[in-house]
Every structure is written in structure tokens, then in C-alpha cells.
Length: 435
Image (cartoon, rainbow, N blue to C red; front, side, top):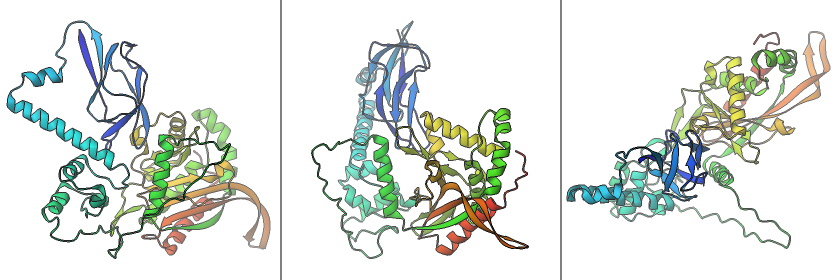
């Protein structure tokens, strides 16, 4: 019989492992080509894995909830037919030479060390590669000790050489604090959440995986960045009238609706090109100005959770292209059909409070970005207009924007100029534009 080895796929450039959330098939079940065999989850997005072949599932190597490294065999599918050269790892190792057996055993031990180190690093906000975690485990370096070791890699990450240098000098000199740590060498007191009591009738609901990730990410962002928020009101009457005028014809011609989001994305893209320090990240005391302008748009999911799909290279697309990208990503987000790359690489984020009729809000920065734009609801209000004949009061469509920014890099002056530029671009919108 011909056996097919189904391996854990690589779900994105930075993904090294995934959790098996649910098996759709059990051992002995028939599966057809392209039928979903399992649901997977990473720290970025959920997805499913289809079967590349048709056959019978003869072996499942992992249980639901197991975290599996990329490239590991997760299932065997019997396709029928003649015997193929399916590798029996145990039998092959038994027939191998002593040298090959030693190499296989070393590889297995290394994987076990990495998996153990991954579990011990769950509570850390800092990224450690499998190699670094493996070395730390072998040298009995605890997570708390590892947190204090300075890194020379991107975003203060530890490289192999960093940890080897640390091991060589361990005990001979004080630990070097990373650039992002406190300037004075004083251990910060650990912040404890207050004790929570329950009363009769209270309902206790366990957070799902995505809500836990959101909670941890929000707390991390507040700990990393000193948040400041600025506000500005924008007269978007020209945009509202233009959309009302063209939306029906656009829907008939393109088969999709046009919302306000692409217009705000377009204005933000132009402003980000003029103010590169807002389209940036901080790595210790280094400022990284991003070449690409990739704008994420926060999207609420039907289950109440939140995800941020990213529109890539927004400054290189016309309004029609932005409309199609926004609709496509929003639709796939609601259907849980996003790929890991769809939510990676963002350099700036927009969140729309107006979807829920909120006047405005104070958004939390999406790390490692340095700013996030909040869009309030569009309301008709009495508004003072300056005309050649004097000031008049008119009914206008007004929207309030909020910009939360990282005060380590973005000061009030820069934030004010940036959000003012967005206001100018929106208020100067050409109501006669053809899309």
C-alpha cells in the first residue's frame, strides 16, 4: 500500500510551529483530496490544512492542543496501490550505522530541548529563536536571566553569538541591560493583578486562544510605549456627498460596495510618505523608518475578537485598488480565511470606532508600530464656514480623528502636523473625481 506523509506546513515567513486545534478526521476515516483534515492555529492567525491526496487516515501522530514544529509529520494517509518508499523513522534508525544513530539521537534530543524551552518562554514578550532557546536550556539559563541579556539582533533579539558571548563571560561581569530596559540598573517591581472574587450567580468564561493573545498584546503595548493621543475634527462633507453620488453605479459596475475606509487609507498613506517617523519602529535607541507603507485595518470578528489584516504598499495603489483590497481582506477576515501573510508586515494601523457609532476613541498602538489612527463616526453638525462674505453656520458632515502615538519617537508637534495633514487631504477631496 502507498502511504503519504502529511507534514505541518509553513504557514508564514516567521512561523516555526502551530497548534492543532481540531482534527476533522480520526484514524480509519476516509479523506478526499482538498478536504480539510485539521484546523491549525498560530500566534498570528487560524487556518486549516487540506489533504493533498485521497485515501484513508491510518495514523495521527499528535492530539488536539499539541504544538507541532513546522515540517513534522502529523498524519499518515494510505492511498492504496503498491508499496512505496514511505520512511519508517524507527526502522530506518535501527538499520543505520552507529554514527547515523548518534546523529539521529542528537537531533531528537535537540528537538526535545527546543520544545521544552518554548514552553518555558510562553510568558515572555521577547522573541527567542529555537537555537537560542536550545542553548539556554543546555546551559541552565532561566528565562528571567535570559531576559536580561542584551541582544544585537533586530528589535533587540538575541543572536547565537550574543548568548555564546554571555555564556563565556557568565559570572565574570554584571549582566548588560538591553537598550530598551530601564536606564538605571534597578529591578522593576512585578505588577500583580488584583485578586478577583466571585459571587453567587456570576458566570465564569474561559478566554479563547485569540482573546488571550489580544489581551497579552495590549498589555505589552502599554508597557513598551508611553502612549499619548491627539484629536482633530474633519469636515468630510465632500466625501460623503461623493460617495452617495457614485456608490450605486460603482456597485453595479464592480460588484462590490465602496466604504469610507479606503479614502482614509489613501489619505493616511500620503501623510505617512511626508512624515516617515510616523511610519517607523523603535529598536532600542535606533529608529527604523519603513520603506514600505503597509496599513493594517482593525476588523471586528463575529465572535467578538479582533484581527488586523494588512494592505501592502498602499501608497502605490489607486483608490479602486484600495477599495478592492479593503473589501477582500474584510470579507476573508469575517470568514476566517486570512493567511498568516495577510496580517504580517504592518507599519501603521487604522481602527474605525465609527462602525459602532462612537464619536471617537483612544486606540492602543499595534506594536512594533509607533502610531495608530482612530476614526470616529460621521455626524451631521452645525459648523462655522468662512466665506468671502463672512462666517456662516451650515450643516456639515463632521468626523473626529484620534492619533495615539509612541512618545519615545513621536512628539506632540510631529503628531499634530501629521494628523493635520490627514485633515487637509480629506477636506480637500475632489468631489468630481471619477473612480
